[in-house]
Amino acid sequence: MQQERMKQMLKFIRRGLQQTLHFCLSLGLLICLPAAKKVRVSNSVNTLVIDAGHGGLDPGCNGNNEIFEKDVTLGVALKLGKLLKDSLPSLKVLYTRTTDKSLKLWERPNLANDRQADLFISIHCNANPNKAAAGSETYFMGLHKSEGNLEVAKRENAVITYESDYKENTRYGGFDPDSPEGHIIFSLVQNAFMKQSLKLASGIESHTSKLSPIKTRGVKQAGFLVLWQTSMPSVLVETGFLTNSTDRVSLKSNDGQQKIALGIFRAVRDYKNSLELLNSVNGK
Ligand SMILES: [Zn+2]
Image 1 (cartoon, rainbow, N blue to C red):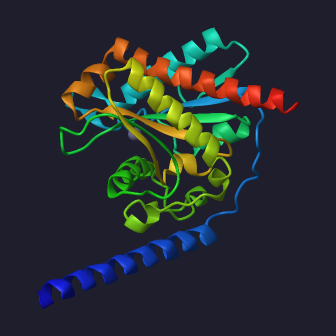
Image 2 (tube, helix red, strand yellow):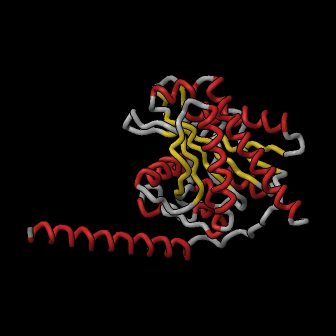
Image 3 (cartoon, protein in one colour):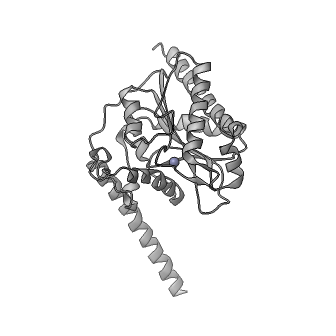
């Protein structure tokens, strides 16, 4: 009994220490990160960047040797772009890539910042050693609230190791993908867009789960390098698990990709309409 109480007390102390360490690391990173870019709050959605994750030498997750993540992300990105261009012709749609080419990670947010985009949507697929893991989840920038979220961010952030100079590249602020603490990325810039990013992320999960057989795992937060330095509302969509045989059927088919693209399209359309309605009511 005494031993049991002792064990519980030790567990409690350990958890307290972990939380303190987590806070200190976050604060340390906050201070060490390069100066935040100017925050521009947009009243409408005129320009949107669609980022097809991975590409070229970086295949992303392997879908049982039947398909790779880079092909699914490009398929969904191009279908989403077409839907947006056809239905919302006044919206400028930009892509980080439209072919199977390698990109440095920093080039993706850089395009969105340079072109003063109003939204940034990064498209990915999930993977897990547990093949039963299935479903879609949409992330926005923040501190991970579970180890699972951290694992997803770690896997996606590891793409910079394809860049031979990533350790010297100041754009990554000394980020080390091998260090578990490194993934606790805190962004002042993204904090300003948290509400909008959450709104778009919720819309994406709600619409895609109605159209696609891939179930929703909800909206989540974690430290993704690709979202870190974007100066606009930004989300990262993990469209489904390529390691799950049921999700994979949808992810690799044209019809399955089209349904996901349509869900994301409807979320963007609703987001744009509500923002513009709000601004017209406010007389802006
Ligand atoms: Zn990915």
